[in-house]
Image (cartoon, helix red, strand yellow):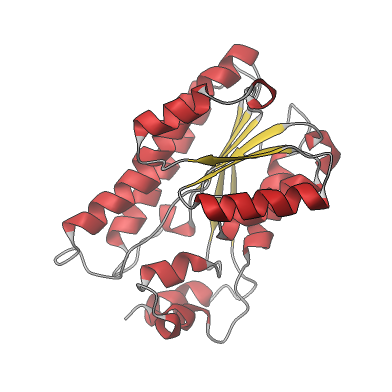
Length: 260
């Protein structure tokens, strides 16, 4: 039950939009205290103000953080105020995709940005937060992967590669923590309509809408509800992986076709 999250400290990366923002809203409804991180601090501040007005008993701390900057990540975590220091839930949500170029022509800077954000960024935040959980012998880490973490498609090689890495890291981390009460969950969505597609296509709204044509895609709220569910189970229950599709299972093939 969501009431199990009452008073817990939840750290969400990439909380300024999309799934991260939806998670912030869902956890606030559950009575959790929030550490919201992202590069776009203005959006975080606006979201924090709104959530505190809607949920007066919930504490919300916006923190400027680029997960790619390891020094900034560790400084931010080490500098958390006392009331936020004991992180109970970490939602590694920050991630992106750039373009649909084939391996032959994908730009080196796009490769670096995707791996630095989706893989190294996740590692940076996990390494900063996990010692806190191990010291307290409790906690839950949620890694936002994707159906691309177990599948691949033309034009998605680098993004799929990053999510395959997230899948492997998540499974290994779960095994490494098997002797502790710390849970590790992978959330693997497919076709969520957020800024994700708009960023992929460089702001081209028409192309960004293409993958969702003719179906009802998932929303950030759909994924946030699943994350809150996974992190509000009784202590002995660990949900290892949740793969989430729109009702129309053929949408995966639709997505691949629309990338061309």
